Length: 260
Ligand code: ADP
Ligand code: MG
Image (cartoon, rainbow, N blue to C red; front, side, top):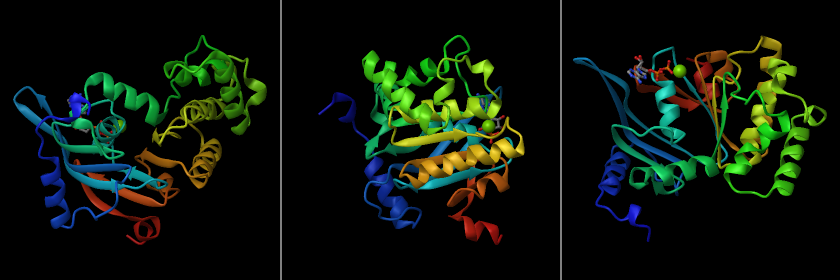
């Protein structure tokens, strides 16, 4: 067993307690299990509880929107789910493995292999072609050039941009750039797509298109978590988790959310 996984840890007890309290169901290895996640920032003498005891399970194949006003703690939670940051306390179990026992290198590896990110500002590299941008995650995974090219092109074709492969990102519209970033998120066949305000920089017509793509990739079996401040965008998901002041205040189906 990897040494990183053998330390003393009370995760099992924490999970047991959360189950007993009815906070989580007895699901067989959910893709994501967050148990009593706290993230506290120290600002001088004051403490900001950006995440204040978040417990939730997300199964493979779900499409979950995490919705809340600005400052509610969404990005903090996204960074933890995306293995970009670690909680102050609580457990994050990804695909059955306790991330709290992973080294920074292992976390980075998990991030590169398991998670496809889509950001509000696309985060494409301006000097690389559209195709090269989509190839990037495969480079990090050490996939050889020929296979990399082929898979990246295939993914670009899936988002309808096969003919833009050799363009630079700036030669594309905002909606097209976001589709490139979706292709980049998908090319490594991640276990999870994590989208933070994916339509935040787009007009409403283009937003609809991009949301259509995100829905479609969930329909094809991908697990999707979408972060948004906008309840009407959240309605595109199947399950909605509402956050206020770092706490989950609602967790249920989109239909139940609509009746609130
Ligand atoms: P959201 O994404 O919902 O707007 P954030 O997760 O960015 O919310 O922030 C939640 C709270 O934590 C806010 O009060 C914010 O000011 C604070 N916060 C976030 N990041 C930091 C940080 N690095 N240092 C100090 N405070 C932070
Ligand atoms: Mg944010």
